[in-house]
Amino acid sequence: MNYKMYDEMMEQPDSLRKTFESELSTMNEVSEIIKNVDKVYLIGCGSSISTCYSVRDALRISTTMNIEVFSGYEFYYNKLLKEGENSIAIFTSQSGETADTLSSLRRANEFGIHTVSISNEPDSSMIKEAKTPIITRCETETAILGTKTYITQIACLYQILFDASDYENKDQLLVQLKEIPDIIEELLKTTEEDNKKLAEEFKDEDIFYCLGSGPNFGLSFKLAMTMLMEGAIKHACPLYSAEFRHGLIERAEKDVPLIFLKSGLISDEITDRALETAKNELEVKEIVFELKDYADVDNLLSPLILVIPLEWFVYYLAHFNGEDPGATRHIGKVRY
Image 1 (tube, rainbow, N blue to C red):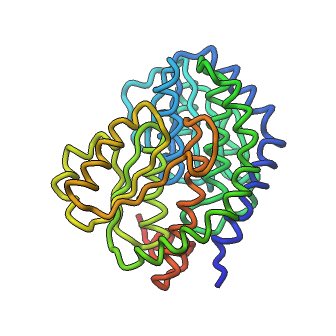
Image 2 (cartoon, rainbow, N blue to C red; image 1 turned 90 degrees about the horizontal axis):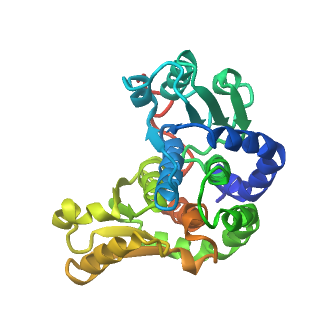
């Protein structure tokens, strides 16, 4: 058994190394531009908007940067955009042809906003039409849920935005970011078996709730929307940890599986509270992925670490249900 996703997971460390070797100077140029703008827009869809959510929330709890996230068409129809405004818009898309995101990039160009695209396809429309293109060096990715394109894209966003930020520990964070390929290489070896067993234990579950705070919400969004639903063909719902008590507490019944992502963030106080309630009062099946179990890095970098054991979990969850975790049933086939 060897699905295409397996090969692409194994290519993540080298994809990161090649991307930083090739694109770091361009990323540094973008960081310098950001230091002099009033607002940063991040735009994407699917896995790409999850990277935007993660870096936005990491910045909002550690810096004073003015940053907003939009899905493609939400940005396109935003009536607050002004011609000539002092802003920068970073567009993320693995293919560089995502219709929603591409339309918004063209709208930003019309408004004279400096546009940056991060994409894996060098000949794509987004790479050609952005003022500043950044190409992730992953070669073609086949698995629908996104592994190497996700990790390179989120790493580029962290590099660009934290380099431009006033985060007090940014120098250490950026050094650790360069070490991520080596950490991932090790995690790919050490986290497979445990998560294979976990997947076998939960293979018959039909729905998962995924919770995280700060930058881990973006990862919980990816986990639910593109990993569990697209990859493992399971019902899934992402939530900010703080939203547990505003709805899920009424639906999380005994033995319903809840996945908690924890990293020792200041906002994880509410994650811990939700986990304690879920475990002790509701008797759910809690699954906890915690940063300290995998790496000793700045906790703002947690999505780049926690995604690896989650990839193994979803990979084997699909396998034990007779699904190819990289295949699609409707995406790309259904008119939309």
